[in-house]
Length: 267
Image 1 (cartoon, helix red, strand yellow):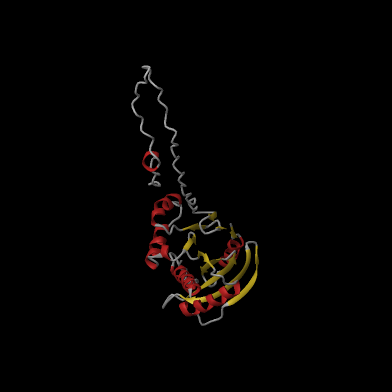
Image 2 (tube, one colour):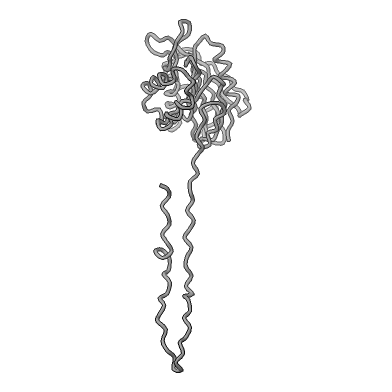
């Protein structure tokens, strides 16, 4: 059941990716895609120092020495400061420490910030990308809860915005690569309404053994179909799904998708 829910998220990621389009051509289908509390002080949490009594005179009139308390003062325990994952770049090699993988984007592709707090930084760094704000607006409208779907990386081609990639990483819940593939194929057919053939190939990539699926699915009335290519990895008990969506007739898109899949590695 848990794996099935994950499959639904994968399918959702495919659907949204297929809906992003900024400049569709007449020959290609439009596509989408403060600080830690400090420990209490020693005086508050440890054994207080023994009180020092005022000196009293001895019979001979001398004053006895005053000795410091021998009660040890406890040292406050060290507080571990969580190490934040480094921010993901918007171009090139993306190392996602939190989800345990890395992938290199094609030179014409950029990562779209799924966290709204990253948007200003993204627009500043990618100020040379035309129509970026329009593409993001379309994406937000198509998937307002994108940050809840588990999509760790979302990337698009520029300047056409006709192909895109999303990556979902999570637990494989003890399933094998074959089990993961079979269940997800059933989910994809049910969710996307795929009635045609889903081509499947299993082979080795530099990052590990993968199952690659290729299939077309409808974008909605009047929008034709898109071509999806997915790569499934199950490594070290975790699953990684790379979903590419692009124009049906574009050979360049398929070549680019394969090259990016070849760059995938687990950490």
